[in-house]
Amino acid sequence: MTLSKWMRQAAIDSGERPGVPSQESVELRLARRRIRELEQELTIVRTAAKFLNGEEPPAPKGSTR
Picture 1 (cartoon, rainbow, N blue to C red):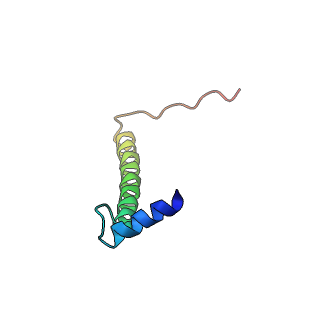
Picture 2: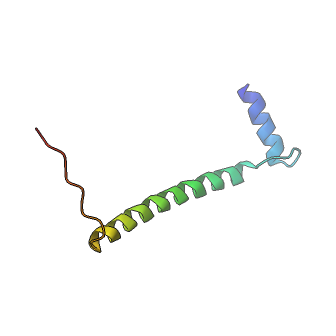
Picture 3: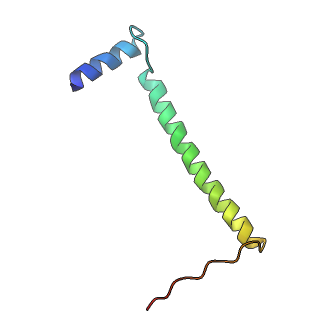
C-alpha cells in the first residue's frame, strides 16, 4: 500500500498524473499552520484590548478548596 502511494506521488511530482505536487503540499501545510497561529494571536490581542479598555472585567479564579 505504501509503495503504491509513493509511486502515485512520484507520478504526480513528475507531471505524469494530475494532483498536488509534494512541494506545494508542504507549503500549503506550513501556510495553514501559520494562519492558525496568527488567528490565535489575534484572539489574544483582542481579549487583552477588551480587558485594558475596561469593556470586560477579568474572570475570577475558581476556589482552591
